[in-house]
Image (cartoon, rainbow, N blue to C red):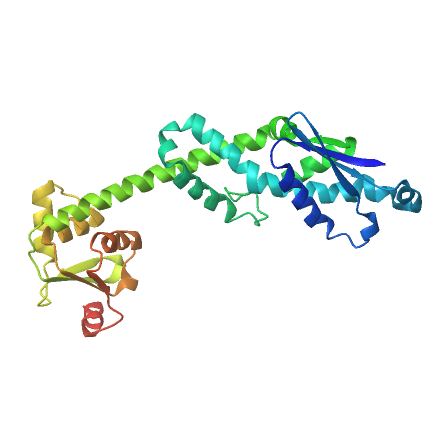
Amino acid sequence: MVVLTIGAIKYWDKIKEQIDIEFEKIDQKELIPECRFHKKGDIHFLIFEIDEKNLLDDNGSFYTEGLKYYVSSAITNIILNYTRFDIITEILENKYPRYMSENRKILDTIKEFFTENDNNDSPHVFNYSYRKEIMNALIDFFEDNNEFIYEGFVQFRMKKYREILERAIDFIVKEYETQKEYKEFLRLLKYFVDVQEMKEESVHIVGIKNGQFKLYDKDKKDITNRCKEEFIQDFNHKDINYDDFLVSALITIAPKQIIIHNYQELENRPIFETIINIFQGKVTICDECDFCINSIEK
C-alpha cells in the first residue's frame, strides 16, 4: 500500500538520502516503508509503500502522523541546505546583476551570514533560518495530502520566506558594499602612507582618561597640540573629530613605528583597528611600561 509519494525535478536524490537519515531514527524498523522510484517526464517520484498488515497492527497513526514528521524534517533540511541558496542566487541575479562577476564571493558571504545562526531559536535574530516555520508548513501540508511535489511547494507555499530572504539579501548587499568601500578607503590610505615622506621615526599613542589620547614622538615629547594645529590648518576644522584627526596626523607623519599605550583607556576601538590595517606590521600594542603608568597619572 502506498502511504506517501514525493516528486521532485531537482534534489530528488538528496531528498531520498535525507529521508533515509531521518528514518534511521525510527526504533521500530519494521515500520519503515519500502521506497521505489518512478520517473514521469522531468519529475522523479519516490513512492513509499508498506505491507497493509502494518496498518492492521494499530500502527495507522504512525503513517498518518509520525512518518510525515520524519519526511517533513528531511525536506526542511533540503530546503535550508540547498534550495534556500538557489533562491538567494536567483534574487542576486535578478536584483543585483552588477555582482554577477563576483557572485561566488558574495554568495559565500550570504551563506556564512545565514548558517551561523541556523540553530538559534529566536526569530528576533535577523538571520534566523525559519526552520520551525518551514517544518510546520510541511507538516500542515501532509495532514491533508499524501502526494507532494517539491518544486510546487517551494514555488507556492514559500512566497513569504522568499520575501524574507530578499530583505535579508538587501541588508547583506549593503553591508558588502560598505565593506568594499572601506577596503578601497584603506587601500588609498595605505598608498598615501607609502608615498609620504617620514617625519617621525616613531609615534607613541597614549590613552588617557575619558577615552582621549595624546601623541608623542620617539623622545617621548608631546606633539599632540602641534598635530592638532596642522590638522586645523589643513582641513579648516574648528571642531575636531578626533578619529579623523588621529588618522590624518599619522598619515602626515608616516612613522616607521606606532606604539599604542594604555589601549584599555581608548574608547573607539574600531579606529585603532583601522590604523592597524593602514600601518600593517608597524603597530605595536604595549602591555604595560613606565610610560603607560606615568601617563595615566598625569
